[in-house]
Length: 487
Ligand code: NAD
Image (cartoon, rainbow, N blue to C red; front, top):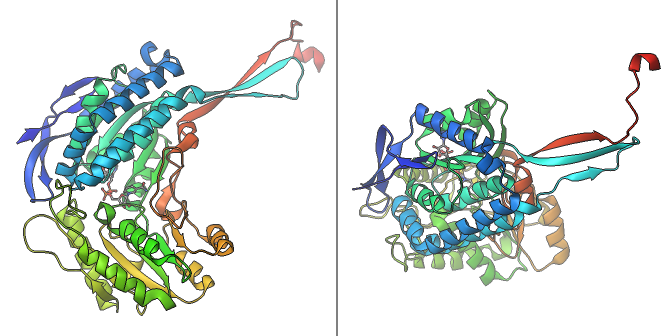
């Protein structure tokens, strides 16, 4: 069995406790992972804090930080195949997706490398004579970054990249489900030449997460995960009033009008819900479809869903792999059962295939006659699509916004005016029009409502890792008069 180490203060070490990680394709243990104790968490935060104030890091120019990030980007690109293999093995995310995604992750580090020396302050035209006033943008301090198991290299790059560009230091807690790619990433990071403690990588479950987010030396918590965990994190971070950015789940509407290019829309829906085996926060998991085209659309979707190649995640031919955990699969089964009991009709899928591993087939549930079905409001985090029909644009908008989440949305129509009305009316952080699931380091990403707050990607994300210091400098050579004489 392979074993992995945690990374604290620039050193690799075993933790006192460890746990076994399961291969989701077989359901068997394949590696031993270090379980960070509260004292490991404390040492990691102290290492990050020491690095934050060290002359090696605090005294480094922003340009030099950018060069280190650029070196990291190159190393991630060079090591992408190995990182992809590990992410596939430990989380079940299929190799054709991990290979493409991790190669692109290096572009995120490249983007933030370029941004490091463009995070500028400002000079204020102040309303007083003989006074210079300017704003310095300074790093917030130690950042606690917490990620879930899906796409960890990607979800950590959108935190580590801007945080280091801004001059912060980071303690990253990888998910206890499939931490291998992040522990391996630590080895790659170590080669880039950053001072020790600038990034620390640990893993463990809720206890390690709680110890990290409530630590008095943490200035900002950057979290991706579920809304329930986010509530714990906000409560814990309240201890030291750390700021938070929360990237949470979604129940994103994928709206198709009858004037859309149907084949394009079907293809985008297939990847929108079945890519990443549905374990994607932006999954277009509610198909909101105009009544006149519903039957034709569902027929085409069913054919495509049933033709999907389900198989071993490390096989390049596989299109849908296993879910990451047995818990996820049980959750999907329970939610389907409850939705069918509420009147939803199974169009395809829904049954666990025979054999080992946590596999689950592409599934479509028609809820047009069951508006209260729980699958319309609860996140599956699996390859399950819920369908609702509409007749008018107003109905489409109402259904789209009938959710406590607000992360992503898709609109398929050839009518430009309608597209603009939908863009204005949809309550979500992202609207994709005639496309779906496109991401870029240049474009901010994040949600509203139960989908969280704060943005990752783009310039704003780097600014969020800074705080403003206002500087007043008096330029007059005249002595400051005695205030009591003035009175
Ligand atoms: P989760 O919330 O259970 O766990 C996420 C992380 O939080 C893990 O590292 C876990 O160990 C940690 N954690 C658990 N309890 C904690 C506590 N009390 N304090 C601090 N940390 C704690 O999420 P999950 O089930 O692993 O992931 C799936 C969720 O993540 C879904 O809801 C999904 O939509 C969301 N997600 C969101 C995005 C996004 O960018 N918006 C991206 C991917 C996943």
